[in-house]
Image 1 (spheres, rainbow, N blue to C red):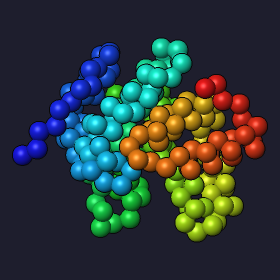
Image 2: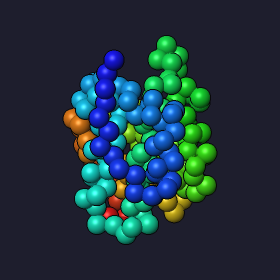
Image 3: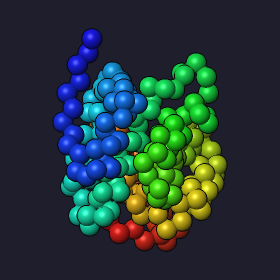
Amino acid sequence: MILVYMAIIAENKLEERVMQDSEWILGSCWGMPRESHPEGAIIHHIEAVLENINNLDIINNERGKLRIIAIIHDTFKYKVDISKPKVGRNNHAVLARIFAERYVQDVDLLRIIEQHDEAFNAWKKGHDSDAWDKSEERLNNLLRLLGDSIDLYYKFFRCDNETGDKSQACVLWFENFLRKKAIKLHS
């Protein structure tokens, strides 16, 4: 049996309810050290993302939104069947959104939870296949989907990707794309 130490303290009733859910507890304890996640268990990744959020100069309402995204976003990797394509109900982000719908009514937050890896996935497609036009098409679709919540998405994307041993190439590429689109971020 592996004992995982949880150092996350809920800051409000919503976080408390989420963190007391048995599905969340199982998911937060899941994971071994692996590429891009040397911290192992998801809970340790969440701790790192929350630390990055704490280092942002943001207002409390935005901080609370980023925290709930962080607490939920990767917690359902344990439910993914790695022998099958990671799409639909076999995608950790889709599963996280379905879980979040029990607790969160804010559609923007639900979209960010579900799409939290899309900028990385777009970058990876371009990086792996040199299909940068397809990558930018994916980001254009993401921008349309997120609308005015792109700033919150970007802040979370940065906090999520400045953890472990993750390369910053995808973050820099995403920032460059947003600059080319003349999208002003408030970070």
